[in-house]
Image (cartoon, rainbow over all chains, first blue to last red; front, side, top):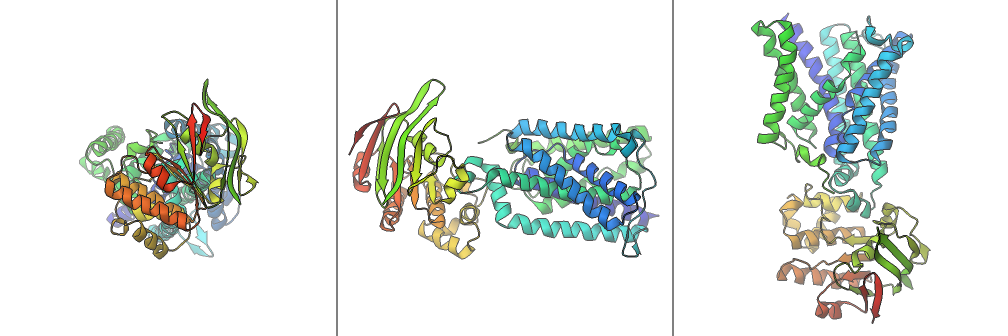
Amino acid sequence: MIEAYILHLLIFICIYAILSMSLNLITGYAGMLNLGHAAFFGIGAYASVLIVMAGFPFWLGFIAAGAIAAFFGLLLSVPALRLRGDFLAIATLAFGEIIRSILVNWTEFTRGPLGIPGIPKPEIFGIAFDSLWMYFILAFIIAAVAYFVLRHLLNSNFGIALKAIRENESVAASLGKNVNLLKMQAFVVGAFFAGLAGSLFAHYITFIDPGTFVLGETILMLLMVALGGMGSLEGSILGAIILILLPEPLRFIGLPSAVVGPLRQIIYAAILIVLVIKKPRGLLGTQWFGGIVSDSN
Amino acid sequence: MIAIELKGISKKFGGVTALDNVSFKLEKGKTLGLVGGNGSGKTTLLNSITKMVAPDRGEVYFKGKRIDKLPAYRIARLGIGRIFQTGGVFKNMTVLENLLVASDGKRENEAERILKEVALLEKKGKKAATLSGGQQRLLEFGRVMVRNDELILLDEPFAGVSAENSRKIESVIKKLQEEGKTIILIEHDSARIKRLCNQIIELEKGSIIRRE
């Protein structure tokens, strides 16, 4: 029982670590405040589920989840080329809302607010990931691969160039950096990994509905990034661990469930307030969270 | 060989004329001093070359090729580098990272060699924000060197810099001149202009009023 509970938390940490790392690439490294990240998460979840439930193998649904989310990342990068700072944030917020509306209203495809139940557990080349242990291993491997791939990317010229456009686009361009292309790449790669996390989430919970992929989720991911530190992948993992575990004690103090939900939100909000006052760079971060909103160019 | 040529460059901001029909040629390996009061259009002139602002009219040629229709990053890749009046370094990045952005794939030891030349090797892991104004300027020179730019645009590189760092900057400029780089230098100190420049243009209200 306790083992199952711990495994469940570990699986969530893996999924949210992928989400916060991928958001960190867009927001922490490239400096584009993205309030639509949950939409990529949702697109990946729905894409994977619909493909697998149409009879295709899990690995195909999983890859497609990333690819389709990446395609939407490319779409969202188009306004990102023209907007900066809080204007871009509003555009990404609208994008998240559009995706949520589509998931709610395109009922033939998504079953709308009813959601999709009975999602099968993954099976890859005959290996069934139907136990908690097996699922944890799968989630851990994918999170680890995501970490190493992202770390490799962000330590390369690509990562340094992203930081440069975060700091000052004009100066980056004067050094030969194609700012538009870099922003597009950041959105595509970030959305790809968020899509993979969506697939991992959907096949674990085995039920998805549009209400899961809303602004509140993005805020949680942003909080993980901000707490761990902008521009630090390890920080994002740490942020995911802390924010997944932190509200858990609430389960054991016997509060009615109607109180526990709002209390979680209050805790998250309180952490954010303490964070911006006491440790604006986050635990392992390199730059101030507010710096990307107030455009310093 | 003509390194850079401007033909009839004009630029207005709102109703204010920043540049009015500015034309000049500069031979490869020469240094042009750009002088004039505040608001005379010196920085706008550099911005028109690197496309940080798009001129309203006129043409820019680099080594005979027209470049004013290209985006800023393509112009930079042709070998045109610049040092900004303010805000040219990436302050939240380390000194080494500031150089690696410019070097694009060149190895770290190449970057370190250049850092040594601009006397910043000990600072390589420090954030650029911790450097003094003069050291930040030297770091920008380092970027121009690592990129091996042929045309280098310097926007008041000595402004607010200590005497010691000014000497370092001047020796870096002389070294770039010895290497045959073409330079446009915005500077107020006339003695320094005389020391460093082969050619002088004075701007007033966006027009050239003197050529030497």
